Image 1 (tube, rainbow, N blue to C red):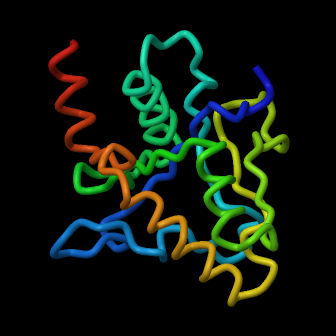
Image 2 (image 1 turned 30 degrees about the vertical axis):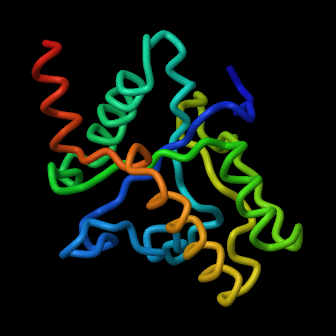
Length: 161
C-alpha cells in the first residue's frame, strides 16, 4: 500500500502538555511543527491493512512508536489523535475558503516505507500555522472518538491478550 486514500485515517501522538489539564481537551499546540520539522508528523492507520479494526491498527502504531521512543516517551497519560483524511481536508478547505490547501501523504523518505506520514503545508508562515493548528484542534475536539488515551489502548490490549 502506498497511497493514503480519502477514506483512510492518520494518527498523531499527543502528550499531556498539549491537552488542557482540567478538561483533557486537545489544544492547538498539538498541531504545531517542531523546530526543523518539514511537515506535521502523523502515522497512517490503514498501512496496517492486516488488522481487523481501527483500534488494532492504532495498537500497531503504538508498538511502532514505542520501539522508536524506547526511553519510555509514550506514557499512559498521553493520547492518540485520529483524523480522517477526507474530513480533515474538507474541513480545512471550508474554514479557509480554499486558501489553505493541505496534503496528507506517506513520508517517502523512510526506507523501507512504514506507517510514518505527514500533513504537509500547514506552516507557510507562523500566522497560518497557528490558524490551521487551532482549526485541527477544534475538529478533533468535536468528536470524542477522535482521541484515544494510551491508558485505554493498553487496557484494551490487556483484555484481548
